[in-house]
Length: 247
Image (cartoon, rainbow, N blue to C red):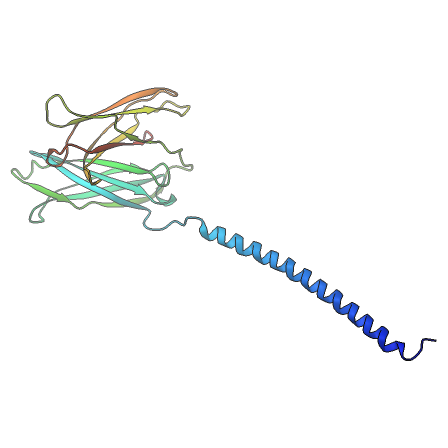
């Protein structure tokens, strides 16, 4: 028979053992719960750090208009901000205005974006012969996106080309801008859409034009954009070639 005085001691020892085990389990559970919580917080943080699609589907980056007698050309640089602009008809429309805000003519052009973040130059011809003697001073471009999608997959991004040379053309009425391009795809790119856009020293668009060369797979070509006019015949500080897949 266990002596009476030893019962409380054994009970106390058992209680202490249970208390220690409970504390150990609680610490372990707390540590494990903390790990799970930390993982969740970390995961949430990573997800929140991923770039979100913001702003309009497509936006006008910059634009300019060049008049030459009874015709002119607007050049509008547009960027695709998210996937909703890719694979759809993207239209740029503008009014040509004189100093008093009178609309001299209205023009538009349709292009398509091939990847998110792509920038496209829209060189849009504008005849002004309906208003002889008119002096165009500005344009007011807007961009709209059609509902119809005709492409299910994005295309691999093509490079934005830096001009290899910018020189007055043979008639002295504009500039010839030259680029180098290598077709690194496995397909023949027949009728590439290349918009040459020129900038002043402050990075403002001052003119542009387009051309549609062919490029065999794995081949390097030279692309010349001729008779490119600029605002007030300014010498471009730089020119870029915005390349897009054939339509």
